[in-house]
Image 1 (tube, rainbow, N blue to C red):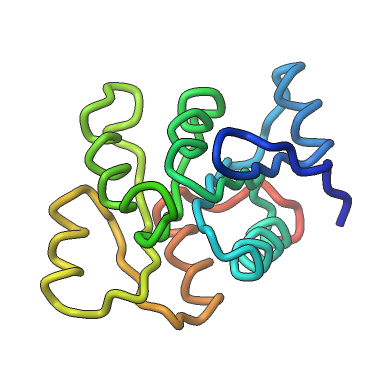
Image 2: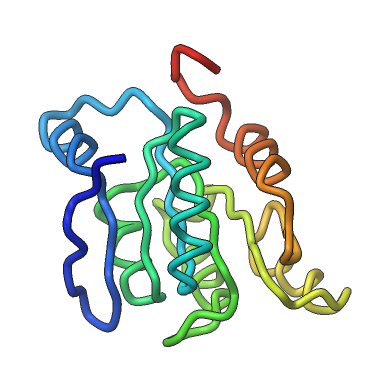
Length: 157
């Protein structure tokens, strides 16, 4: 997998694949776009790899500040977000998205170690379409993404 160097961006790092960056600049993005917001680098890389292998174009952020910027620049089809981010609670990003006209209908999949019923209900009240408790099966994540964003246009899916 070819990756562009990670660039310092505010408090965190971001990831946009080289080929996706070029296709975005010239207006050719046929695949569904997913933004993954996760501060755990290992988990973030695994999620990126799995979603890319299923034909999705994946952007990634490791903090809320980055996520806000990337949401406006890339307008993804879906967001996968962790709640335990280093700078803000992921629910704050969900609430902020509901207040933004261009983002309020964007599906959100929350991934979190917060497993209490009250935490899950709070996630749904803040705009989450799905709430996956860690640890979760990657196949389950892919099924949820596919169900909410639709299938990718990947020729092998």
